[in-house]
Amino acid sequence: MTAFNSVRFRIKPGHEDEFVELFSSAPRNFEGLRKMALVKSEDGAFFSIGEWDTFQHMVDARPKMLGNLDRFRHMLQQIEGGHTDAVSGEAVFETGGSSV
Image (cartoon, rainbow, N blue to C red; front, side):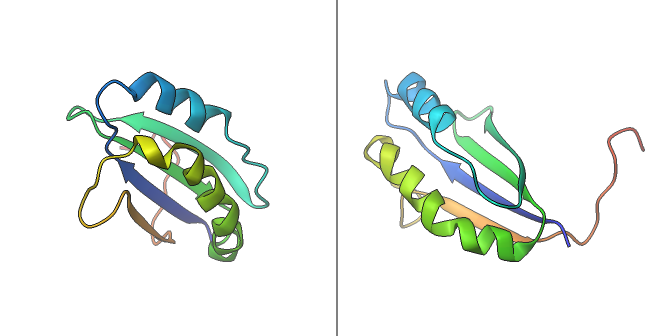
């Protein structure tokens, strides 16, 4: 079953461009990763969303994802007791984009 993960980041002022560059250039040859996006929200926070073939693929990739996080961890502000706000799980509903 398809799984998704999302991680929210708050970047220290003046480091946004460097963060985007490091995030974008990080290796993502994770087995089972379908696609990943980095989004900047209206309040200035960033969040990534990953789509995975299965939840287990995502679990197996966590050590490599944490390695990528270590590349830019120094640019992150503290949020909610840590540097990231991460959630993940299996899809319980999906639709293809054109349905309303």
